[in-house]
Length: 273
Ligand SMILES: C[S@@+](CC[C@H](N)C(=O)[O-])C[C@H]1O[C@@H](n2cnc3c(N)ncnc32)[C@H](O)[C@@H]1O
Image (cartoon, rainbow, N blue to C red; front, side, top):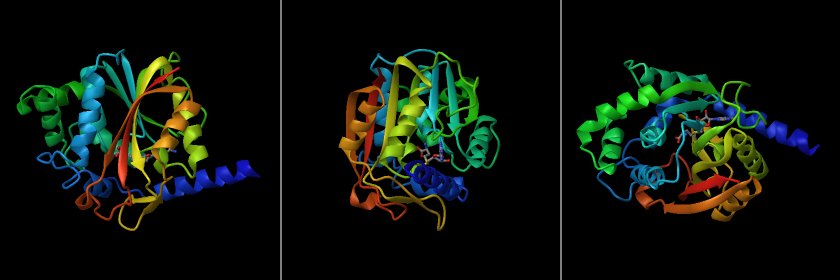
């Protein structure tokens, strides 16, 4: 009975995503005020700073990094591509994978210009903003695949799509809480993606705090599992990760722009036991 309820919840989430609009989502979340590089309290610079710090502390390394639920966005792998030779992007929706391929192949008509993002990350790395062209080339070289994924399956990607030994690092941003019908499904999904990570590998998890919905496009209200900091810590623990650090960002009032009801964002750095 309980299993059927969960299956129905997962199916309902998948149905919501059929109307996800990559261009609108990018517009809502990845333009000012949320992506204002002149403001220290803007959400995107905060996320980029967390990722930059995590990848330059010296403890994360290896060859393969997998980003889970990439969506139509690339900001989350801009620091990673300086450390990892191979970066694999994944998403549930073909529309998002198509948007990523468009950028990878340098096609016209991308939903967002990532140049200011790359310039900002170059500056975090102590380089001139103009080095962004090198970063773009490096990221394009590093992206080894763009794969379909379903975090609700015990085996989230097609068998053989990734090395059996597991990735050295996983990144996942705003995915698990916004695709899961409840906290139990969120925790299970965290366990499922853990099968893609080698023991001792790192997980960088960014997500929404106390959010109950977000807009995936005009009139596309997608439910989200409202998470507290304690839920994140407990789920990581229950799924076989040791938490290294949890950072929290509180959204300033003018960053609450009506496209969701998020109040904060967490950044977790964890290690698989
Ligand atoms: C809120 S968006 C996050 C996108 C991006 N990572 C970001 O930071 O903005 C959630 C993403 O999860 C993807 N998704 C939906 N259902 C999924 C599933 N069952 N497994 C994995 N990803 C899923 C969606 O297609 C969407 O790209």
